[in-house]
Length: 204
Image 1: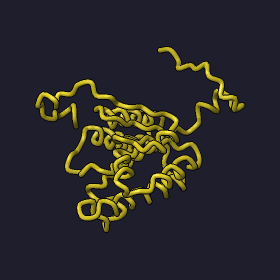
Image 2 (image 1 turned 135 degrees about the vertical axis):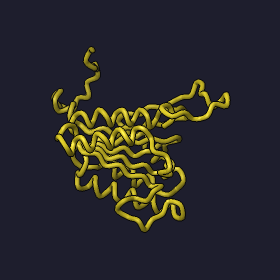
Image 3 (image 1 turned 45 degrees about the vertical axis):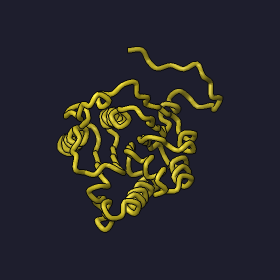
Image 4 (image 1 turned 180 degrees about the horizontal axis):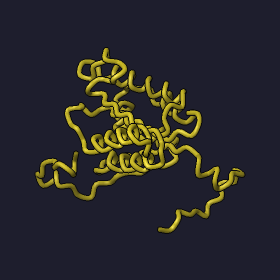
């Protein structure tokens, strides 16, 4: 497989090795299917590198148990048992953040979202994880639950080499402009348009 190459010269004086170690802020947005799926694939790559992984689902209810969760949690157990890969943390707002049972997403979703973001900020400040997946995070921003400017400032000034991937439709322009990598999923067609229901192995 050919190595990824670029002819761009950023003029920053960094070596190739230094550029390979720079933290990435990525956004997966758009109306098309596959935003979370792609982000989970990146999380698998990160686990393979031995990175510590944190998945924070800001909207999903927790009633669904997606295949990615089962797979990553199994890989986390494999790491605990053998040292292979990296540790995995998985948190879902809909079932109540494990560190703050006082916030119920059912009765106070905005409060639960703020508590989740507070914890992510604490982890970022402590450089606690290598890779963060903030799933459906854009909704918490668009619905006014979190301050977009504060979020962008925190993410752009995070210390160390922590990588962050954010998913969700209609990502605010400020966050798109701050991100290093932005992908927009565009729907061409979808089985739902013809009345198909969600399928195990495809949607979860």
